[in-house]
Image (cartoon, rainbow, N blue to C red):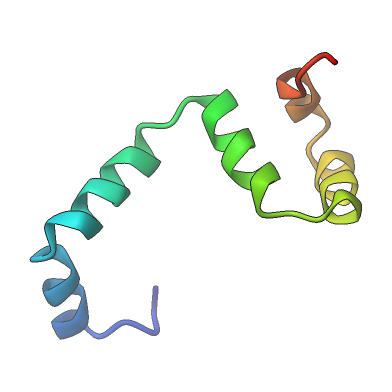
Length: 63
């Protein structure tokens, strides 16, 4: 976050929606975090992510 000035950080913290999203993010469990990551990756990028983080495979849904 080095690209945010202290002033900008203060402005963001005054926004209730930003605060809510930050709290939601930091309180995610492993499965929720994986789902957030997975939803933003292409299938190829997901495979690369899983190669780098093999323990995350436990969160893949059984089909």
